Image 1 (cartoon, helix red, strand yellow):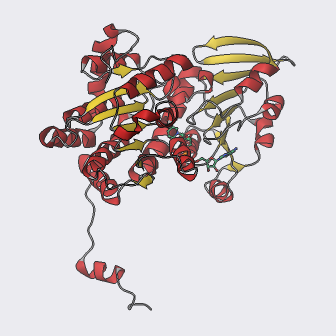
Image 2: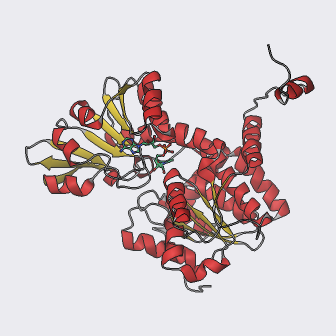
Image 3: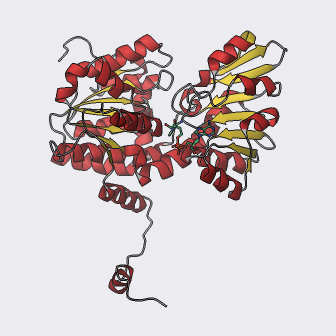
Length: 421
Ligand SMILES: NC(=O)c1ccc[n+]([C@@H]2O[C@H](COP(=O)([O-])OP(=O)(O)OC[C@H]3O[C@@H](n4cnc5c(N)ncnc54)[C@H](O)[C@@H]3O)[C@@H](O)[C@H]2O)c1
């Protein structure tokens, strides 16, 4: 294990501000708090080395503190170069959790930070987008023997891992936290929905009412963004490649059309497809002067930025996180947050209240991995149903909502086939 400095943050003096914001987020994370209190008594992660590659935010700080309470030795690095909250990172170091993340870091520093986390020789990996796991499986494969298991936070990461499994390359079990109902139904839908609109609003201060907002991808995140944009009075247009989701968007009351058509009429474009070059050269060519382009999908590949660069004669910052590209015909297109997930680049990411459930899943899945050490195979596992249900129950309890239970008669009815018409 490394003995050299194992953290790198922008400014240690930001720690006090970070600590106050971490405490504020904690107020909205009652389920993580309950888990943290139990972890503190039971120490289920005693001595376990965890390397976590996550967005370094106040919510992630609360997860890391809970894991530390559980006895783990945690090291953090950023899962995106532009999503770090520098004050939270500084506070984490003060809390004794080595953190490697600086907002705006370049590609080289981003991977240097991932490698510093791997120097810890983790037994559990926590990833958001699978960059840590990919680095471990390629450049640092000598360390894989130490690893008991891992977790993955987001859709794009789970897709990458499934493809790694298909090619026979995954070397240890990983739990797809993203696929828990208490994750995607709330984090992807309500978290991304609200915070994407928040990020674009903070970056541009636009009025949403009356705007034609084109949302590319009607998955769980797309559902949330569309719902919130509609709520603010926007005219929402959905583009999709998957027929059932496109049909769902039609029945949900949105206009659905190919992007080539939507490109001509949209005022604001938001990619949330988890795919490459969703908005491409041909679309830029027909867009209106002044169109705004934002991405909230995991990687900055959804808008073809190299094509936009090569079509432009000039690039100028209009305001922080807003870059105006002048095209050869004189028209200007505005790209937000370098095409990186705008909710974390220009706002604060998801509200703590939804991250409470996502990170409760993370914490309980790590406990599950330790308990089942040696029993799991190198594949992508779903979150165990009892963990998902337990989190839903705890969340309901924390907001004071009680629900009904099945009567013995109803239980019998639901498990029998004899009773019919
Ligand atoms: N910004 C955030 O904080 C945040 C949070 C959660 C997830 N994510 C990321 O957002 C992305 C979407 O996540 P999700 O959970 O909604 O995924 P999802 O798989 O549920 O939905 C993606 C949708 O995009 C569609 N799609 C794919 N290619 C397309 C194309 N070329 N044009 C139009 N539609 C296309 C798919 O058919 C699918 O319906 C992923 O990259 C995920 O990792 C970001």
